[in-house]
Length: 579
Image (cartoon, rainbow, N blue to C red; front, top):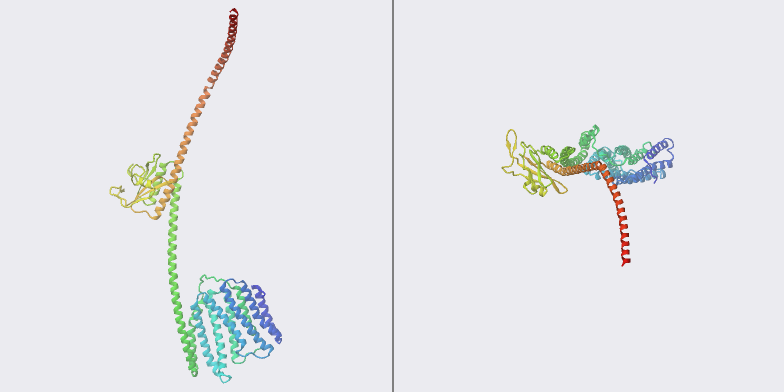
């Protein structure tokens, strides 16, 4: 199979239609050419759909067009039978005949493909409803056909069975075709717009041509010769084939309902009742056939009742789905509100942490840090009283700052040892301690109008690498919220780091000062040494002069010593000689 692209397929289709009509207008007596042209249409359709099947990857779309491909192949077989009997055997194909059977294979396979698409999409009730719309149309057409076509032709038919088959066959086919049209128009969300338009146009024209063919065949007036109507069936197939290039995923974004959709929905709703009214009107105008109309109306009424029951079931399902979606939307709304509240809380938390972090810049001593921190954090967490204790070099926690301290030393003890009181115990265990039952003699929160005892006390340690460096005690009328607790934890976590940083900075400053003092002392000693250098130089000169004199005297002494030793030797020799 030669694969075709979308643009090539459109061009080939246009050329084919022009050739077909040109041949009809000029040389339609060339039967072989007509045979080739007639079967070329469904063959082109098969090639086009086959090319699309190679491109399509989705399983559902592949199955959909695969079923249509089988239907088009059946149409090709029907066309071969028809043209073979007409051009080579020179006889007309009977109605209904084998060619009609294979033509109808296309109709039924096409309807199966559409119903498969609806079924896979989960619209089972819609499919059943359309089936009943088809049955209603078929009942209406069958009743009218029986009264106006069948009875007048009873005398002309060879057998009654042949006439009934001849009439019921086209009515069934027309009903299926009308059902397919209804299904296309009511299932816009299943098909892309271009595919829907091309298929609706193609199947509508096919239905109109089939209706004309059925009417002509019943009255034995249809000409088997090639006419300007002959290419219409092939053109419809080619339109359906070209639409396969537009197959793909559908954008399910809800669209605003237009006037045409409203009118069509109303027409579809009123169709069964209009069919019943048509039969009633015809029964009144043709009273001699009232029994036939009564039977048709009874069947029609039963179908309408079943259809309405199905509609009620579908509406009930839609109501339940709507309720489920509403509940889901409520849950989503609550989740969104929760996310919004969480985002606002996180924003508040980050803002407050940033404010306190900004406050730390420029602070170079522990007292200033403690005072500014306790002043900032206390109103943030809705506390009324607060005290901060910081560990000194001896391991004692000294009170460095307080919030709402009316008189110096009013709030809290001045210091705590490790393990002493709640503050000392908090530092020892390195954990938060919360008191909800406050003793009666506990400090009272005072204002200009009166005083009241707090109901909650929270003691929080601030540590660095496992060592508690400070403890904050807060008193309030209500317990802290989860967000306020998170803020306190972040603050004390950063507090330990900042205290350690300031202590390190202070130690560096102390070492720097000691280094500067040593440098100054060394410089002073150097200056003293420099001022004593002339004296030392004079002393050195005197010492050198004395050293030279002593060297000279030593030489003289050595010389005298040598003389004395010589004389001693002489005396020794002289005394030996005398003896």
